[in-house]
Image (cartoon, rainbow, N blue to C red; front, top):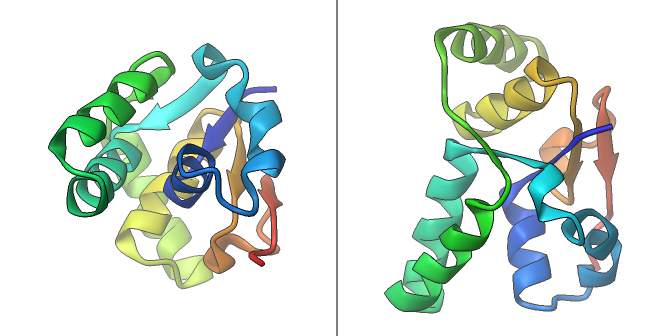
Length: 125
């Protein structure tokens, strides 16, 4: 099964946060990870703000080793439906729809995804 590691998971792993060990098995084979461009956007934005542009670019270079998934019309429409159904924000709906579209397990610590089908959720600290 393929996996989509969401933004909070990338951040947790890259910063060696308290849940980094939970994400480690998924990150060992980065080439197998689905990386929506929206995750790249969020990760780059966060890393620029917190770590600086050079480290942000290095994080994005790492995501480029995965299977980068562009936003398409079919993902957009699915995201709109999932947003309405599960009350997800725009970004969360795009990420969840991307995972669903690719039949990938969404790996996350984001409470908005807790309990949704196709999600492996790790509770934050």
